[in-house]
Length: 133
Image 1 (cartoon, one colour):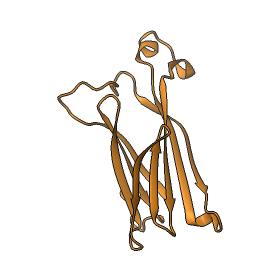
Image 2 (cartoon, rainbow, N blue to C red):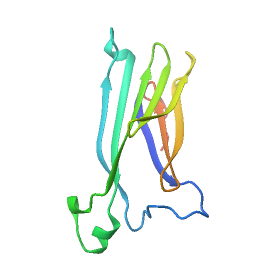
Image 3 (cartoon, one colour):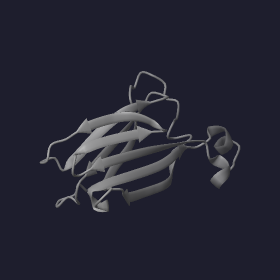
Image 4 (cartoon, rainbow, N blue to C red):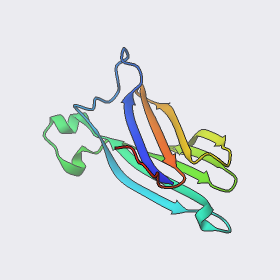
């Protein structure tokens, strides 16, 4: 699985977003891919992405670096290539579960989070031959 795209976007234009990317942008903390199959480790992939939304008040006060860290989150995709089960957990809560067919090599899901925002994951079972630009 290649962690292809993790997107933060406004869900509804007419509703006020909790985080304004111009004032307090999100930041990446950590990204990991682990092999987690019971018998063959390469048959199950777990991709973890930790990120946060910066503290707008600290930024406006002139703070920089770690002093601007705000609310932090974790999204984890677990994809079994044998059973084709796909599970997405966000901050410890399951937000997606599905079972794909053997021919599916691409997985995509999105979900809403607090503050009228949508997170989106697009993953591939193998590196795409012609990746998007």
